[in-house]
Each structure stands twice: as C-alpha cells, then as structure tokens.
Length: 143
Image 1 (cartoon, rainbow, N blue to C red):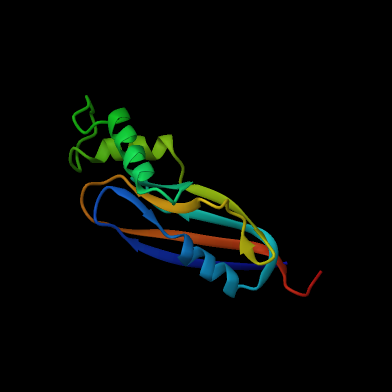
Image 2: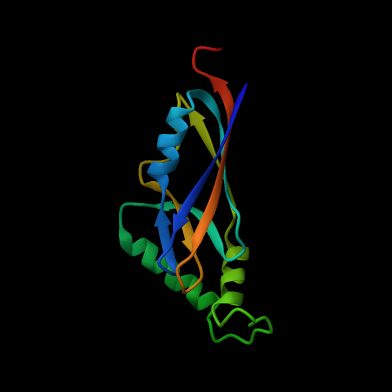
C-alpha cells in the first residue's frame, strides 16, 4: 500500500464553479498507484466541492443561480460580521460537501464521461482556496 498527499491552491475570482479535474488527474497519474481511492478535501467553510457535468457551461450557471435562490445575500441572518455574502456562503457549503472520494483504477480517476471536479466558491470577492489530495492504493506492478 502506498499513500501520497498533495496540496492544490485554487485562486478564485469570486462566486462560481472552478474546474480543476486536470490538475488532480495529472497528479494522480504521477503517483503510479494502480488501484486506490482519492480523497479530495476543501479546507474552508465558505467554499465546497462538487462533481458535476463539465460539457455545458450553462449547468454551472444554473447551479450557482439555484444556490443563490436557496441562500440569498439579503436573508435574515444573524451572522454578518464578514459581509452579506458570508452567511449564505456557509449555508451553501453546508448544503454541498467539502470532501469527495474518487476511485482510481488502472492509474486513472474513475469519473464519468461528462464529470468534472469543481471548487464551488461561495464568496463574492477573490480568494485563495486550499485543497488537500490524499491518495491511497496499490502501486503499479505490486499486486
């Protein structure tokens, strides 16, 4: 069994979905793990992770609009210390997830044809988000 850990920094320009599938995929391939499990973890409470369609950009716009409707900035929130987008960002994170598990088979991520991995930035202003990758599995040639 082999384990590898890596940190990825994603700079956002504000609210939206930022695909980083290729970054993860390239790192996984370099680890030379044949069969395993990748954990992707977002170290924030106002951003989250999604596996979602990566073919049609209107999907991303509709997802963002839906979550903006569920947790609007002008809601009746008590927590407003960091601005009007802060509490809605926490709610959107609570409704999604900060951790994903992706199988690795034959040294590659097992994602569907149209699936991509996204950081879902919930804050209005640009941020630097840290994602931790943890891969565990069997090395190539060691069966």
